[in-house]
Length: 542
Ligand code: TNX
Image (cartoon, rainbow, N blue to C red; front, side):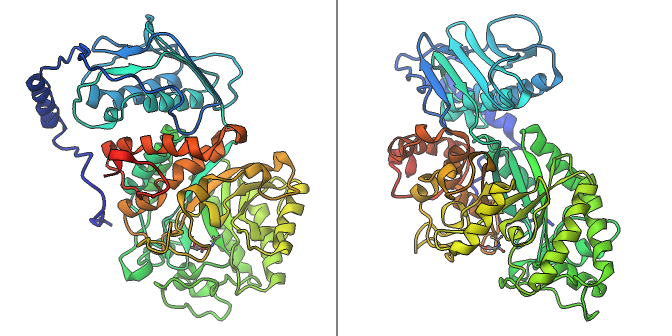
């Protein structure tokens, strides 16, 4: 399953020779006359202003002296193992570029402090106070501390992201940031079926999502072209159904241990993994693996093209539901998260009557194994279970009738995740000239993916029905991490801000300046991105 195809990725995170590089970095510092004790060079750069953060914080009050991270800085935590975990994550992030030890301790004052305390923070909010004596991040929950740490990261120079010792100085502007998200669901989806992505590639993506406070990773684990998760009771799904991908490459699948590793890693970045098994359509890989799943008892060949809508599970056959129950049971057991996505889109080879019957039968199985149903918005053509969420992927030109069905479901209590294809589909080309991606929903330039309001998107939807936003990345044309990044950046940070920041605080003209400032960070991280002419990149864009 080794993929040596990351052609666009620069080798910016060279791991084996980190120590050598660090030593070299130190020598270079000595050579330039800078001190590693943190003595500020005469031309010290001003700290990043507190509002130069994506997503935009709820409120920012600059003032007072900056704090400077030095060789003597400690990271203080009080008590909880989760706070300590976030502190260790922060230390690991800062050590390579600062060259400092940054010990995590549970006593003492000053330095960087992570504090769990009651306050108006909600599940994910935080407050960051910075001044000469130190930086304190306060939150009610560990997720808030983690998001506060991401803000701290954005306030440090981009060079902090590098893997070798950099000169600094490591200043954090003085003042207070108070912050909490607008929506609880801020997701990204990766289609690992059309092309397979390894555990390391998924982890790399998770780290990029965490930087922008995205808290859901939706994995599209099955489709016509590949089944990507081991199911013990139906082993051929993975071993045969996972053995290819679009274009005929070798595909791959996650063993249960590998999948758990993805879930664990995501949780360490405060992301909840939402697994999707797409049903009853988009199932050719399963149908090819087991003849008995087909109404005519004949297994079709594996499929490596990009058509949709040609496959369907056999809705009238009892054994289909044994299959579904086995898959849901095993997947639910791998999923500490609350949700299980059952797809339900483009079931063009399933009659309407069968579709409704299938969904009526399958949704209770998800509930039986303790999970909440998520489905693509076609589920509103059947009867969404109580508490189910539907993911809307329509576009401006979607028929009034289809939109009305979704609005009515929302009025009747179904929660909505908004993924309008002509706004946030990361697989849409930016322009006619984009070398990768599709264009069935039109071209989606950076401004278009940012400049919309989920709260006002589908008129008639009650305010509380919108649970958030999600940016899906379908991978018919995407084969490696560099290509994932080229499509995700710079649109993904914009979608993150759409999901996090209050509608009134969002303004494209100001956003594009903050976005341009991210380019140095992507360079330091070795992240690819599209140099949109809509964004004033300056020298960093070269
Ligand atoms: C539609 S969006 C699909 C996918 C394709 C995608 C390509 C959705 C629920 N279904 O099967 O990969 O378009 O953009």
